[in-house]
Length: 171
Image (tube, rainbow, N blue to C red; front, top):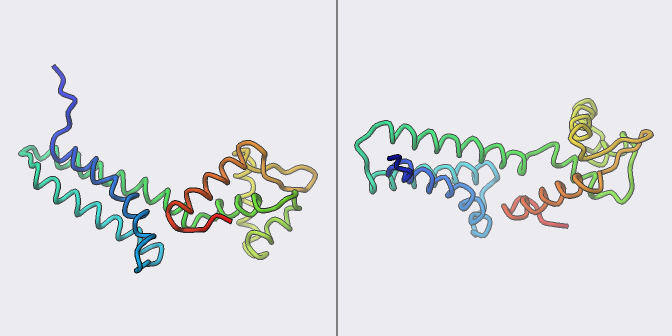
């Protein structure tokens, strides 16, 4: 018979991995509000220390359980870094937000200027291609605009997630 109940270190890793987003959310309401990078490192420290405390409490004698728990924590660390990085420093997210803020389609150069102040022109063109391929913006007759369905929805999700984590305020 197969036992689907995880061992102590694995269950501790699953529980501790949820401390990363919880710490990021709670840290926005503290009087000491560190920079975005420090907030992320603080969340990681809380989660990893939480896992260490939890697995010593529940205990296990199988070293493979500790390895599996560590790999779960490492996976949670990498996934949360990708999400946090996109929300906190995401160049493509800021490009999508620039398109979302505009009431009408802009020319490619106007859109790049609205997003980056006119700098990073080559990089912006590359990211525009990615956003177009993902069907988040469309380019017609030299004008760039956000797509009504998927583009607007993803922009709103990005805004909500940024506000949720205390990175940006919803305009």
